[in-house]
Length: 142
Image 1 (cartoon, one colour):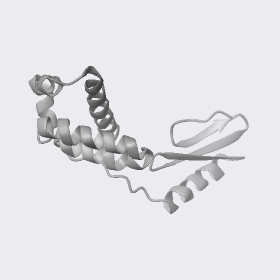
Image 2 (cartoon, rainbow, N blue to C red):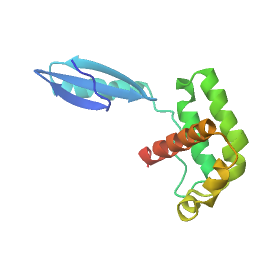
Image 3 (cartoon, rainbow, N blue to C red):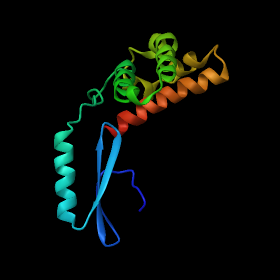
């Protein structure tokens, strides 16, 4: 049986698969009827409340978005990954644009040029990865 990346109830041949997602971890089981699958999913999700932080309000700062993203994903990261991403934020992203509003990023790209100025290409890729991951997560959280 193939797995799916989205939570829900799906028909798999003659059976039904229920997929529950709690804190980014997927759990699934198969059932004979759709009703059984929906009941299991509802019960499972009720027993495991979602404690993930949500993306900040309508016009957050870059620091707010990165902090919420970090809090939502840090338990999935290795300790070395967490240390690396924290230091990238503390040394580069925070001082350069941590207090800027996300809406300001769309109108002015000079702060991005300033962020990438004077660093190695590898470090620029790492910074881009942190920012892209945080903003992609925030967009997914609406």
